[in-house]
Amino acid sequence: MNKTELVSTNTPLEHERDLLLVTALENFSFLLLRPRSKRSEQDGKVFQRLRQTNDFLNCLERIDKTMGEKKQNAGRRYTVSSLSCMNVTKP
Image (cartoon, rainbow, N blue to C red; front, side, top):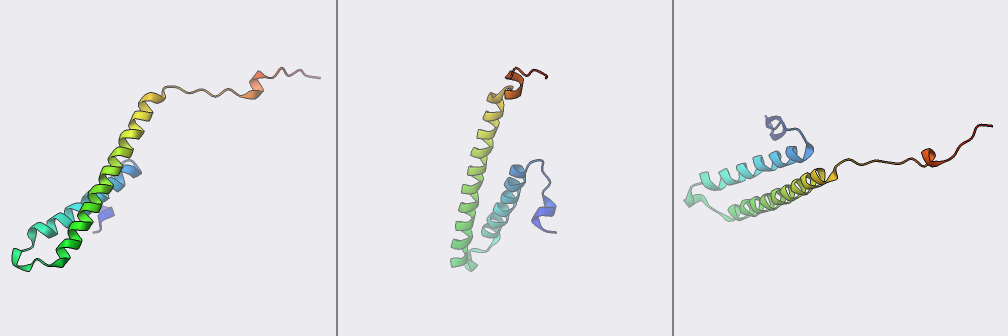
């Protein structure tokens, strides 16, 4: 079973967020479950990936918040067709 099979969400933004959370959990688990005696420079790379994932999650949260604010402030929008403003007479 891969990551995409574990995640089922509504929007693409939520889907990506959930995939990143799974990745972060995997990286975090790797760091926590590893015995201290076996720590190496690979831990630094995993920690860096964990920070990058966290930064990207923060970006997705800001995007989601901005999109939510725009939806709340949008209200109803109307489009006026230029054809409805023309005085058209039939020959």
